[in-house]
View 1 (tube, rainbow, N blue to C red):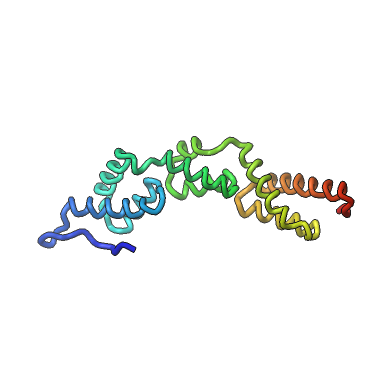
View 2: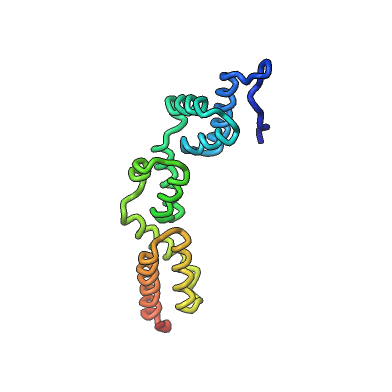
Length: 179
């Protein structure tokens, strides 16, 4: 970990240039590990005592050179969350918490059917490991897994009903017990 340092003072006063250098170091250190929103970087600078006008200048410059772009950040973040099969509702909430503007969030969000597709994929994946469970336990666990990923209750119910119904039909065709 890089040691934290305070801006250098000259004659008891901290120079404006030193604040900018310090703010730039904070931003670049955070951007090394992953992309971040402008608001996340501003918050980090504020916590370290960087004056707001200095932080704004540094953030503006980082935006100019393309190191900060909230639209790219939101799009990249949403694609990562889709791989984790997270609901759009949960993605919106997390992007708002990261300080991304509502218009940018709207542009980054997938179409409405993506929630259903993601919930269905997750339920099918989880279902593979639940073959030996009682039907009511299987239902509860699947619904809980979907709810923890932020899917709406109605969507959870519909998807679990579809997946467990398909499993029941498959068991009946294979000569298994009907539950």
